[in-house]
Length: 318
Image (cartoon, rainbow, N blue to C red; front, side, top):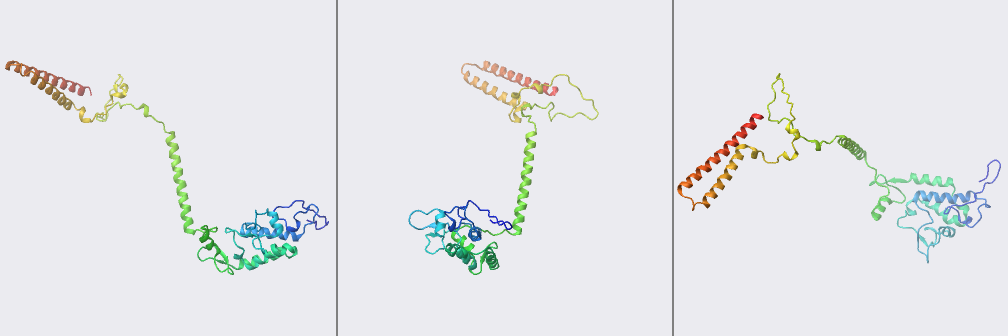
């Protein structure tokens, strides 16, 4: 770069791989005066990267042996659209033919003609003009609103690419309704997640009393005290607070009824007495059998009386 007032020249001693024109490769850049002609080559590389997403001197090698390094390809002017080039465009690369013809011509002048005649490379002003012309020639695809193609090409290249490769690099823009539904769904999800986190935090702060459960001091079936009556204060320790956990029964409620227990005991006694009489029937006489039956009946009556007395005592205590 030369200072516009003093004329002093500031040289660039280094070069970037893939951006140095063929006429400067192999030279000492610290002693070479680079001009706008050399910058035009670099400008063509940058525009190609922006339009096609790849370096113009890259591709599939179809020549003999291994592919040369990038600088050698550039020095020989081998790119996919050079005459007799051993480099071909990859199937994933956007072809040069899909852009406006004026842009195609600028690339050919920059990399083919300009390889032998550097002054033939298009200037920045020329690039600006053809790019504006190409933009004015664009047409929107009627299938995908995010697809644009050159009218001179005649069809949507991006739809063809999607059919052949199965990937749409420029997918359709969602409609306003789809966007609104997506945003509303996201907001609801955020609120629900927030409520869930708050509820979880409250549950974590809530103390657990699972190990301190004791039986109530008053059964729900006990009569409530009358309004205005002075409650009786009991000084003894309630037995329900010192009862062990083993006293809690898991038996059905009907088993706890006294008459059910009485009937069960009576059935067992009658069964045992019948077995005893049947075993000793051959050895007992008539009078002895009568005495045995009377004694058994008295024992059974005594057991029934004791059970009734115990039941009445429990009710009076409650």
